[in-house]
Length: 274
Ligand code: ATR
Image (cartoon, rainbow, N blue to C red; front, side):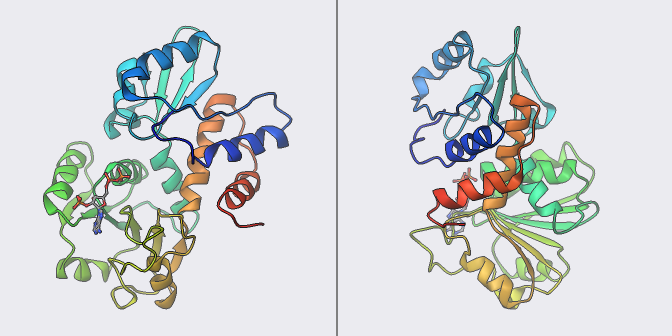
C-alpha cells in the first residue's frame, strides 16, 4: 500500500518467488490515499490477506493501526511490513535490515566507523539498524546540519556507540580518511539527474572503504563510479531493495526465497535482461 505505488518493483520480485517456490500467493499493489489508510488495513485483514508492505507516505501513520510493533520499528518510527495473525496485527521495519545485510556481505559491521549521508527516513532506518548490529561509530552528514543533529540526538538516547552529526563540508573530508563504510541516502545522482556531482568524490575516498548508494536507478550511480575510481568496494542500491523484500517475504511465509530469483525479477523490472 502506498501513494503512489504504480511503479513499485516489489510485485515482480515477490511474484517471481511465489512462482519459483510453487506457492499459491499473489502480491498486488494497492494505491491507498492517506484518509483511507485505516479502513484499507482493517479491510485487508477482513479479507484474509496475509500481510502488507507499506510504503511512502504511510510508513509512520500506519503505526496507529497496529497491535504490536518490533522494537526496531518503534525506534525507527516507521513500519514497512505488516503481518496479520488471528488476533493481532504486527508491524516490522525491514528497510534498515536490507541495507545492513547488503553491507554485511562486504564487511563485518561490528566496531566499524560508518558515515551516512542524508538525514531522512532511509538514513534513520539504516543508522538504527547499523547500531543494532554493533557499529562502533556512526556519523550523519547532511546538507542541513540541523536535520542531521536531530537524528543523532534520537540515536544517542538509545545506543552507547560514538554518534555525531556534521554538514557537507571540510569536516566530512577529514572524517572520511578513517571511515570503513559510506552510505548515501540522498537522491543525488538519481535518474533523471545522473550527471549531478556526487557529494563524495574519489579524491575523498580510500581503497578500504565500502561505498553503498541506496539509489538504484541508474545501477551504477556517479558516487559508485567515484568509488570504483578510488579502488573502493561498491554496493548497488538494488541490494537493499532485494534484501528488505526477502525479509518481508520471510516474515509473511517463514520462507526465504533464493536471492537470485528476486534479483532477476528486479533487474528485468528495471529494464536489464539477466
Ligand atoms: P527519504 O525519506 O527517502 O530518506 P527524504 O526524507 O526526502 O528521503 O530525505 C532526503 C535527504 O536527502 C535529506 O537529508 C536531504 O537533505 P536536507 O535535510 O538538507 O533536505 C537530502 N538531500 C536531498 N537533496 C539533496 C541534494 N541535492 N544535496 C544534498 N542532500 C540532499
